[in-house]
Length: 421
Image (cartoon, rainbow, N blue to C red; front, side, top):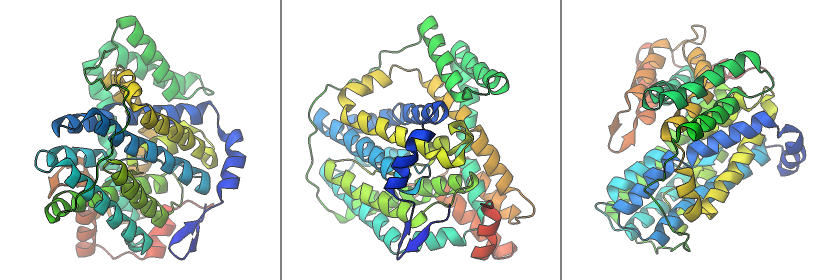
């Protein structure tokens, strides 16, 4: 689906078209993908935020406000983007950003961190509204972007394997159900079969956990921001880079791999607005999310590529509800065993990874050495200056290709990356 450009923001079919077609696209496959993406996002990643809040000695009210900001606004981003563009652009928040903040709260008071959250959101917004990110992404060779996606998301596939060692019966049953469903039950999404069988196995084996991190249902407590240069350099700058270089770049690459034409500028702008709004509430950033976009845009969300946006809509509703009822929802979702969540998320990304590898190492597309460098850098999970591997992956792959391979033109690599309509 081609998006027309209106100054800086791409135009889409509109909310009327998205809402009007939602009913016919919301089926068992889109629903199951949306639920799996929501469970993934509301489980382990929430623990990172809760741990960061506890490490920073935040009150329960401040913790609930943080969760409300990133989940409530992340869900709202999903609803806006999916319904307006009718593609599965899925919102959440930066998971590595939460880890970055966790470390920073050992040094900076929370009110200074909140000021940095606002500054990070403003930076992302300005980069989007000026069209800088769109121009950069259109210049990058798609094999390098796809290799970054493959390297960044391969950990989810590996996690599906290592989870079997941690919880053999539960994860083994879910994995077997996934492939048997893929072979024999054409009308049932394999990821749904895996989740249902996994939950049954959890119940039969008594693998539900009570969860040590319990938050009372209390009113959010908002924190007035304080702006300092130190927090700007230590938190705002790396957080903005993470949002653009890790989350948005992954989501853009995933959408290209699945045959969509993502609205790059709009994705950056709304990630910036999400960061600003989340900062006012007390959260580190609400933005486009790579892993959740991967789940909702995969063929596990249905064969009809035009209808997969319904998975993002459902995911957005569940995310927003999780944020609103965070004090009650967190202990419940944490009762699900982590290995099962990791395994189901990894299984859901199989086709995304296949598409990324095929696009990255298609000899006709070229840039093979640059793509390989991007792959191994992304897989390394390195971090310099608090900036994670996906950013360095794109930078290293592009530099190597510029040095030893022909420089791309925008028309060439867009034509290679985008399937014919």
